[in-house]
Length: 158
Picture (cartoon, helix red, strand yellow):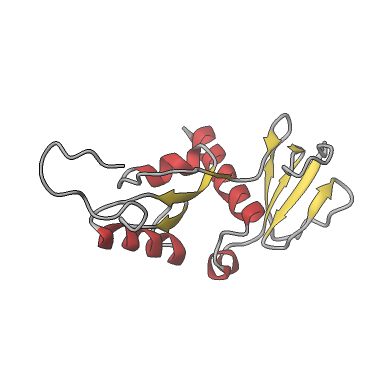
């Protein structure tokens, strides 16, 4: 259980750092976190960085010995693991239990498509923004993409 929680936390924190999705207030409240020893794949096509250091909230990324780890940092050993940027799901139908699941799988942005009631998805988006709800960044569209439901029964929508 502890390993699962630690892995979920690692995915969450890395995703925020690489995608610049966390509000400044969230990062300002946390002490620095240094993830050391993992293989960093930054998603740009550059060669992977082995034995890397990623310092979250201080902004340092590179090979061990080239990046300063703050004394107050919580150090997470990532030896034997890969460090990846956060993922963006291309099409979400967000539900109340999904935030933690998305984060556990590395999804940090969720373009929510046509969620009703609209007030609920907006509240989820704002909760993630202000740090009261754990979940990916939500792009909320309500039914603006495909319009309101058609009238009548048996209507074929295009």
